[in-house]
Length: 624
Image 1 (cartoon, one colour):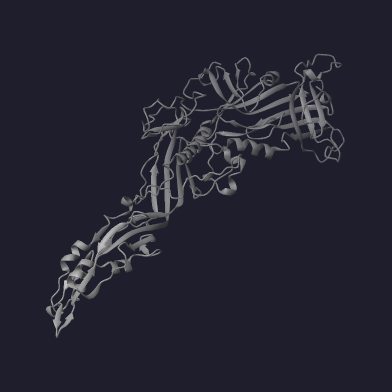
Image 2 (image 1 turned 90 degrees about the vertical axis):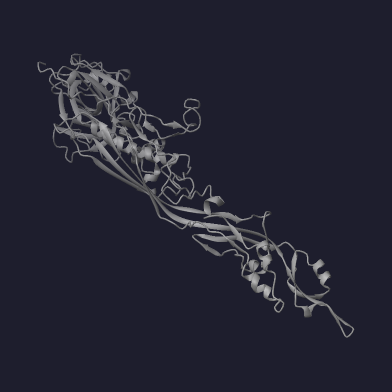
C-alpha cells in the first residue's frame, strides 16, 4: 500500500506539494479523507506505531498525502512512484494523537485548516459585501464585519480546499466547479440509499421595522425677502414697527422668527400739532392728512396781534417689511415592512403543507447613521438625508427590502434540499473527477425516482483499506424537491421614457414588480409611494406648503383715512378713531412638531421558484 501513497510529515511552511514530499514517513494500513459542507476536510489514518510523539518539540506536525493513480497492487514491490505520477489528496496538521503508543497500530487525525483561515474568510467576505446581498443596516455596528454574516442572504456555506487551503463560498443548490455524471455502471452495486430530512419549510414570514428621527432645519420667507421687502402704507406705523416680531420669537408649532425687517422708507416724520399758516402747513404735509381744529383755533388778528392757526397733521408712514421663520424639528419616524415568501416545492408527506412556516424579525435604527464595512473604507448614509420622509420607498430602501427577500429565499432553498442520496463509486473515478463539496452530481439509475437524480455534493469520504484492498468513495448529494420553472413579472410603468429606450438603471418604473434574482422571485415595488405623515417635504418646503391660508395685511392707509375726521372740540380724538383700525399683518403656519409617524408596507411577492433535481412523484423501477 505504501507504493499507492506518498506520506510526508512536513512543517507548516511546506504548503506546496513538491518532489521531496514523495516519500513514506509513515506506514499506513487504513486511510480516510472526508469532508462535509461548511467543514474542514479531515484525514484519519491507521499507521504502524512510530513509537515517537508527533507533538514533541521540533517534530513536524503537518502531513502531505498524495495518491498514485498508476498504482498496481500486482506489480513487484520494487515499483516506485514518481512525482509526476502523484495526485495530492490532503494537506493538514495533526489534530489528534493517542496518549499511548503501546499498540502495534495507532490512529492519527489531521485537519486541513489553513493557518490564515480567519484572514482568508475576512478577505472573501469583503468581496461579498455588495448590495443587495449584504446590507449593514440590518446588523449591529459590532457585527457588520463578521464574515459569517455575508452568508445570511446566500444559500451558501464556506468551503476550504483540502489541498490548497483556499477559502471560498459554495452554493448549497448548485456547485461552482461543474457537474459529475454517474450511471448505474459507475456506482458500486447496491450502494444507493435515499433518505429524507425534515419536511421543508414552505413559507417564510418576514417583519422588519425601520426607525429613525426625521431631523430638519431651515428658513422660509413668509413676508417679502431681503431686497424685496413688502411695502405697507399706514397711519399706525409706530405701533406696527414696535410690535414687529424679533429674531428668536417663538411662533409655535416648531417655528421661530429668524430674520426680521420692518424699516421706515419715508424718513422720520411724526404726527404733531402745528402752529402755522394753514395753507403752508397743508403744502408741506406730504403724504399726510390734516384736521382743522375748532374755529377759535383759526388764524386770527386780535388787538392788532396775529395768532396763527392750530392744525393737526397726521403723517402717513411707508414701511418696508420682511419676515422669515426658522424650523428646527426632530420627529420620530418608523416603517414596518411585512411579506410572506412561499416556495413551489413537492410534498414529502401526505400533508401538503409539510414543514411549518418560519417567522423572521428584523429591526434597525441605523438608517440615519453612517454604515461602513466596505473594502474601500467608504461609508453609506442609508437614508441619504436626515429629513427624508421615507426610507423603504427610496432606491436605497429598496436594496434593504431586497436583502430581506434574499434572506427568506436562502432559508427556503436550503430547506427544499431535503432528500439525500448516498452511493459509492470507485476511488480512482472519484479522484479523477475531482470530487469536492463544490461540485454537483447527476446519477442515473433505474432504482431512483424517475431514473435520475441530481444535486450538490454534501459530503464525501475517500476510504482505502490495506487489509481488504478496498478503495472506494462514498458520496452524499442533496437533492431539491422544487417544481422548477421560471418566474416572470410585470416591470410596471416607465416614468422617464418609453420602455427599452434607455438602459436599465436609467429608467424608473412604478406599480410593477422587480426581481432580486432573475427568474426566481419577484415582488411589487413601493418606490415612490406616498408616506403616511403630515405631508411636509423638507426638500420642497415652499411658502404655499407651510401656510394655512394667505398672509393678510388689514387696515392699511386707505381704510384708515376716512376716520381722520373729528369733532371741533377734540382734535386729538382722531388717534382714538384710527386706533380702532390699526394696521395688522396676520399669517398662520402649519405645525411641524407632529408625530411620531408610522407606516406599514405589505409587500406582495410571487412564489419562489425552487430547482427540481429529484422527482418524488415519478415511479421507481421495482425490478432493478
